[in-house]
Length: 444
Image (tube, rainbow, N blue to C red; front, top):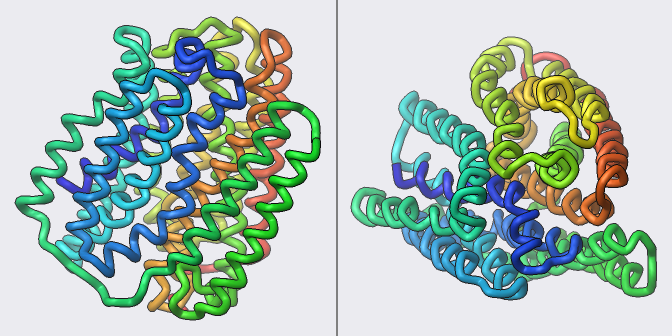
């Protein structure tokens, strides 16, 4: 229960902020580029430090790091709720991201340590199901809170959940470790700086609509730092938080491309859709949150079936077919018009996106674990999660060109973004088809 409550904090907070962006912008007088950083400030440390958070739990103790992550996330949530200007809000959001990067991998590791055999599979299945439910509840709950109490309440709601999670973890979770391998601080620092520079450059470019010296400098710095990260990881070998031996597997490389492209496209649309519905179609925050409900519900309900089908057919077919369906759903977002009807303009695309993502979620995990040696399964799974969040981070940075628009121009920009998302999702399906072998994969 402690692990489920802890991870629910991160999953809810990752989705609930999207429906609050217009209210935050109006209250704190934030520009479109600054609104992007409300999301990016959370995603940046989460995507860059997720692997390090899991390794720290293996080194110092998973129970200890789980409680630390929850506590840090809770303190930062209070900071977000009481922030009186945007700088304080962004600082608190970044600390939230650090807390989430610590608690997420250690909640799953502690859960895996507490159970064995068939019971472990059921426990992890329950953990995943609650994660889907948390993602489904987040936008409607956040919308209701924004409309009735105000946007600050979406952060205060974390407090009772976090306190219960800490109490249960302190009393019932057994401490566990996996080794004394030194942490990869050089890799973590270089990855964070690289993602930060790239995100900064892309955010400036998308919000200004032009490439200037500052944009070029930030992007160049990000590329150089990314190269430094690869160099550091290569020289650290097996001690790296991202061992380059993983990419000796063609399947793992293809799955990394699929994850980055597909989850990046999905993150961009999930950010922009509620914003467009509120600003261009007059939806309330609650209505915009309810508009997203088919996506997590569809994934949560259909994923168990797809897990069983993957066992019989292998992951190549669903990981090729699913992104194609998602791409079709993105293309149907062209139906969205200013002041339009939800049932005819939003629901068709949202339903297809949910159907397509339900074909991806379970097969992707299976394929990632089967694509690498047994000694790398934990690292590969964590890296895949980090790549998914990095894709969302980059997509959010580029979304500023849409957020900066208004009225009919906002809808037109959203249509262009939807077509880019469709092309990206289609490319991810092609990557899966070309890199995965037919049939059921066997562990390497």
